[in-house]
Amino acid sequence: MKLRLCCVVLAAAACAVWAGAAQGAVRALPNPDRGRATPLVRAAQTSSISSGAMCRRAKLRLRRGSGGGGLFILDASRNQVLCRSSSRRRRPLASNMKLFTTSTALSMFGADERIATRVFAVGDLNGQGVLHGSLYLKGGGDPALASPVFSKRFMGGLGTNLYALTARIKAAGIERVTGRIFADDTIFDRLRGVADSGYATSPYIGPLSGLAFNSGFADSSAHSFASDPAKVAATKLARSLKAHGVAISTQVARRKVPESGGLLIARIRSPRMSRLVNATDVYSNNYFAEMLLKNVGAHFGGAGTTAAGAAVAERFARRHGSGVHAVDGSGLTRTNRAAPAEIGRLLQSMRGEPVGGDFVDALAVAGREGTVADRMRGTPAAGRCRTKTGTIYGVSNLSGYCFNRSGKVMIFSVLMTGVGSLDRAHRAQDAIAALVARY
Image (tube, rainbow, N blue to C red):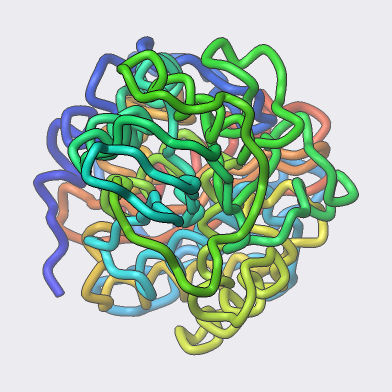
């Protein structure tokens, strides 16, 4: 399929689906994969380079950047491998794991899928607007469910406004509720984290929940995590209803919607899946990645668990001529592993998917946005390479696509271990990307 090169090559920051506001408008949440600046190159070489020279110099940079590493460079236009070094050895992925998570979610759900959060009325609703019963707030695992303040502050305006349910509940004729609001988070299990944190809440991932709110934080300031995200969401909705004239208790509890289902009276839906994937990859959002993986498990793996989602991601990779050992969705767990060649083959295969353009557009443009906003500036890679970074202790990775002036579409993956200096690793990766962009 034809990729949307206008978004890939031109004015990339403006094309970023969710950033909307200027780069500085999005406050960073805790993340080991946060962007780091590398020196601006003022007199970069821009002339074309042969494949042999590119490979020799790339391998030299790889050795300079880390104690050990693997490299894979592919001319995607001709499906020709141009350079490899230890390319079949699996290494820790760090946030390059998100390439497997987001490609799976985007392909299996489709770019236009939206995740619903619903409200059911259980009981008798009389003609005077009184519900003799309770409301059930049922989560669908939407990672973007938030307050408008949180969405603006930490997600560039992307979000599903929980408070929009208030007007819809009132529009259903409800003025008083004799019971309370119950929070139903049962689409997912209640493990709050992943293997890296012993499945408890991680410093880098808010508590995971099938009914999430503000990325698992207790309030819109993001100072501390909630002990029970589902009850926070239900409490916020109850208080909003009360503030808008609905008589209801603000004491909430957790309970599954009864088998009878009740009456669906209100629903809100997340942004499109393509926008959620963009949010995940551009800013390396660990919380979004883990929520998407559990959604994959819930809908395609038989259970709303990290393990079920990881199994689906592994099968998806195999079907695309690639492979991965997946343990979580974000890459924080060190045992997420794949080889540079496996990443390269996944990226090549995704170009032929119906959602291939959306997947490419979800990666951060070098020198323009996300975790590479301050990297590769002044080099041939700036504005032409869409990339995914990856950082955990001793590991630094960079993979992605380059759309060269020559018309070639290039794919590369650099996975580094034994990293003592992130700055040195980043400079080496940036130089490799610039070489790829010159070919």
